[in-house]
Length: 288
Image 1 (cartoon, helix red, strand yellow):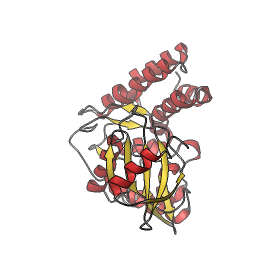
Image 2: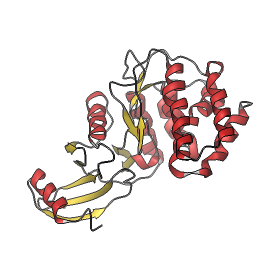
Image 3: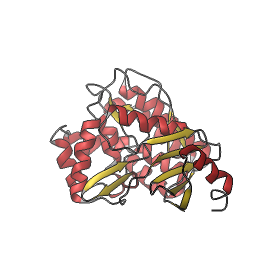
Image 4: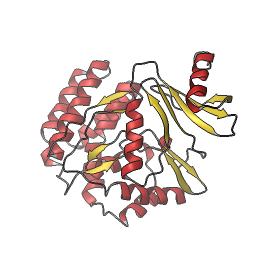
């Protein structure tokens, strides 16, 4: 608290915003940076993220601006960005899945998934949480998922020390067989990339803000799969989403489990061995 509340940090914010800081308090999150709410003398509140130089916060600013420019998702306005400091609009609300807001989220995400590109990936690499996310532009979704998501994150998980060698080999074997289970979509669509309850702010039964993207162009099922993990979002979301974009039965029975190997490997890398069991269960489901 002392480091982020030190006079140089607050003076920097005052210089950029050209208002005096009245008060501040920590906010939840901050995996790759410290996050605070800053209340200004002009009665406005903003969010400040302060990094230690290990991760470039201009990447997050780029992603928020990209979503604001290309989609109807209610992302906070970026007020200032530099590698170690990001200032954003403060969005009032709470982090909670609830029926009406989930329907609204389904409508919003279906709109986002109608933004298309000629290629999978993105014009630049991004981050997912604290981890690098490579986005070379490719014409095949299955090849992109195999090389830039599954095999890439297998290597990161191995290097973290949390992925046993035997399990790594099983994961690599299923990676070789993805053509059995996945399909090429009609076109690449823009996904938020880290659509989970802690990244959605709701207010009065509506989605007031969407934060912490990890965006790229993908199969829309990649996003939807993560939203079925760890208890999922509930039927309201999928009911609203499918009013615009149908979801095939094979997504629920098969493909979502393959796609969720990626977020499970991310969780294994960041949080450790408690995510070994769901990885093993998925591999057993497919006979690996």
